[in-house]
Image (tube, rainbow, N blue to C red; front, side):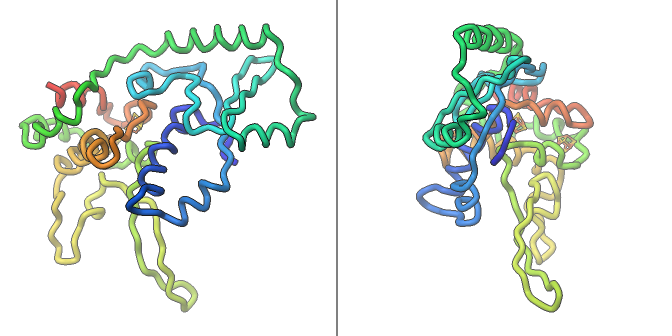
Length: 251
Ligand code: SF4
Ligand code: SF4
């Protein structure tokens, strides 16, 4: 069970499903866990100033990707099942639940209206893929990366980032193939054994992060791989703001 994630995080699973469970490629390790997991999200009552989920099909009570969505009404928790799995989960624990009152639903609706109003970021994503098709070589990339520290926080916190590395290791005398999380913001991620690196500087790596989410994924999966959670903005140590990058790239 994955419990208490925000609806934007749950929505991200729907995107990752397209990658790890698509027609061309099926990742058995991801799919096994995915099929076994029950996802219980918690509707958002505290959007941050960096949130922009509403520009990416999201909202504080978005149901996509969740089996059950919970609403914190302070005295009580309101639970709404979304999928059959969610229905069954609640049925199996029915002595923990009681029927919601009309007043609970009204309180929930008010909280969600309030929450929606708190999302004030403006991001223009109209035709962003096509705009970025023309933006690979613009001079803007020469400047925007200059304050980036290459720490990788933006990718490790992102619910739609999925880059990984595979290594063969020897552990306790036995060979083991290990897959671990990696980040396109690190130089080693693309370093060839020859010593050549096709993304040698912060410039290429920063451009890759933006292009991957807003240009290559729309090309390959017909989806922008961002849910507007704003974490990469909030936690970047040098305040590199994805919204600003998109604004300039958009033109
Ligand atoms: S969090 Fe900020 S400084 Fe760190 S890699 Fe990402 S953009 Fe660069
Ligand atoms: S806002 Fe940033 S961290 Fe959140 S999904 Fe988009 S790229 Fe990832």
